[in-house]
Length: 120
Image (cartoon, rainbow, N blue to C red; front, side):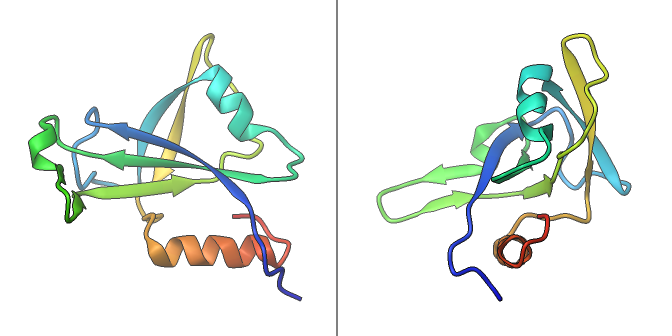
């Protein structure tokens, strides 16, 4: 059966350290170990994902806000870090798959998997 109510926690990050449209199958992103510990905790009662938005350095190139709309440009990627080891002394670098674009379809698929008892 599918649960009609699903909860996930999302840690949102934004960076210009990685160029938009990163080449390759993944890009590296560094997290403080305190943040990673919360995202990597297992077993979980509420699943957590990390969403990283890659943007150009200049805010004018990726964000426009007005009374009638909010335009965000460029791409968000997501990863489930449950069980990921902390390897750095204060910070740990994780790999974010470029195949995991975070959009409306990805969110619906994540919620469906979690709602049926699976992982994000």
